[in-house]
Length: 414
Image 1 (tube, rainbow, N blue to C red):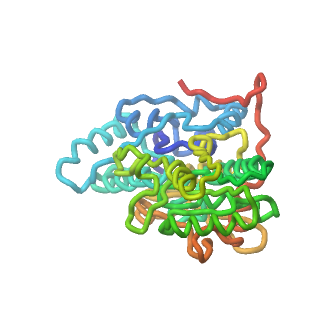
Image 2 (cartoon, rainbow, N blue to C red):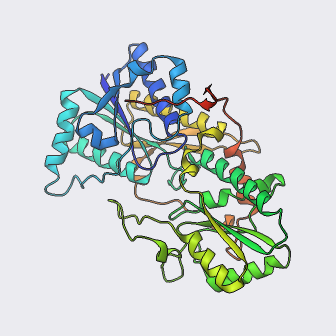
């Protein structure tokens, strides 16, 4: 049996559930430690792989030995260990050996035999590359990817931890915005911009209340379809025949047919280390366009960070699944699994259910799972009822939070 220490990190954009996944990893590792299994200690790297290289570590197996502390961690938004966006070099390329020898030198020095990385698409790229180099240098280590992303765009899984809570926030907030906008009879349009670079899952979630007979946006635009301004104006005109107050949900990543971002004029043009553009301004660009065409009252709302950090309105389904996935990652590594990602598969039947499985990371990294065609209407300006019904189970249930002096209690790892 391979025995040694474990280390876990968080990477990429944080979510309201990423610490619940971390709690699951801690719970799984503590079980191994207490039962005299293969894991001896669990460390946490601060700021992902960057903190790992600088050995900015904390001992999580000592810090979170109490159940109450784990419960507070599970309701804490953002990445408690901190995050990073660092792209690792290709281990097969000449010149990358020095970098990987530094990483694996630390593994050997500290007897790290279990490596868990909680993150999205780019983080799975890190898992894939570390797994590849482990084979190249013949160092026995279990490298496991633990998924998270509010974008819900990882392939191979039904949905990702963090998405359900973000979707719940969007569904509830959109319903509240619609109620607010409906109090006046003045002709007006409110454009609500949601996160979603390439996949429109978050924007689609604004329509979830329709599945239970509640208000939903009048129009919904996803990045899976090219945006046409004239068709947009025509759709607004048609909706104005029904009511004076319109609410439109749009993805930040909307593009015209030529590939130009709808909000290009409002953006900085800056990119991150993975080549992703920093997107914003789609709602504002549409606000100006509507004002010019219709001359009516228009406002744009960019929901921005609350989509991923609104832990006061967590989905109990999301948090429960996040913990279970973290525990599964620890158990899988202890049983000898490596080079893969824990995935969630929806089971068949009328009642919602799921099972967890282990997928080769090479089938996951650097790919995008889009909203399928059957979830988008023919006019490309709304989602279907099937989409809403599919998403509804993911936002169900509320967590009983631990409060202190009127605000939810959070964990801060120094």
